[in-house]
Image (cartoon, rainbow, N blue to C red; front, side):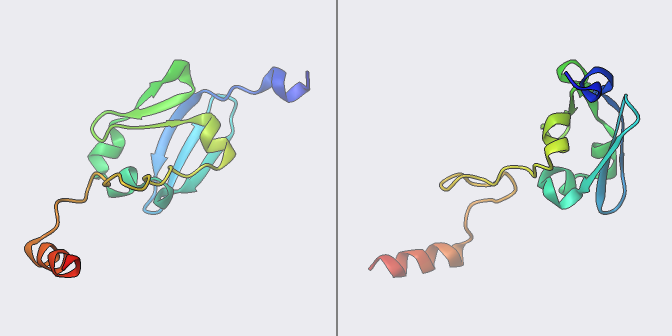
Amino acid sequence: MGILALTADERVADVKFTRDTLSVALKDGRTIIVPLAWYPRLFSATAAERKNWQVAGGGYGIHWPDIDEDLSTEGLLRGAPAPRAEKGHVPINVGPPNKAERRSRRSRRK
């Protein structure tokens, strides 16, 4: 076991935002800074929704109840952006097609 494994404490200490970044301070003194654009729910959230976070997963995760977003320190340390929506799944912020789109789809079927 390496020295880093003995001293690293990857639990969440604090969470902050700038206009473009998410910054997560860890208990061992490190800070992870990632582009906010990697996490569409956080990017689209209001400042109040972003500030309403909770430590989760025994200290190794962050939960935003207002927007139902969860991140782990493991994923942040790996540099993992939010997974993209799978084909066939509609993103949360997308509503039903408007009338013009429905007409266009019908005309293509004929």
